[in-house]
Image (cartoon, rainbow, N blue to C red; front, side, top):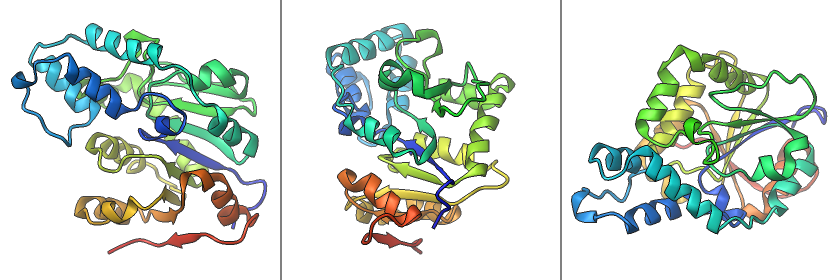
Length: 265
């Protein structure tokens, strides 16, 4: 159990947008494929969004500008976010940083006064008590700084220009425990990014994966089990609607009940 003054990192992934009624990566993939000659692409149901985008670009079916336009249109048509989940996260006052692999602009548009934003292209040096908000892939409104293909991801991982961002982000993992929430462990690109962050973190604090019944399927995958065990990730099982109450119970003793499981062999 943590001291009441100790806060957490919240890492939200590709499934979080479903909770706030915004387009998910799965929806974006469907839209990209709906306007594409599928016969030209060797389809793989396990392709992540960056992998699909890279394949479309390699086959010269789209350039990056066109893909960004499609994604921008998707968010423009479905931009009525349910802010309840975010409001509850900010009101809880238990998170010092939020790390996102989503592309939307919801937090900036609705909670700008509560956050200090860092992206691979622009690192915040704000020393105030605002919540640090890391957008690993950028967002669709800043098209020149939008990380959408595997080549884009390779670039921000390899070039020295982006080192400041990664070091600042790793510093959060060093300072306090991290909760992975609504992340897609079946997304190979996501796991690669997470591994890239964690493997170079020298004072790593505990990492927790909050998941529902889908965890049983994940634990049937040897690669996922290997990743979980590699970093001693502890699983907290619970429903999404009970996320905050379960986290408060586990770390601050505010509730009784909950089902926490350790690593799997």
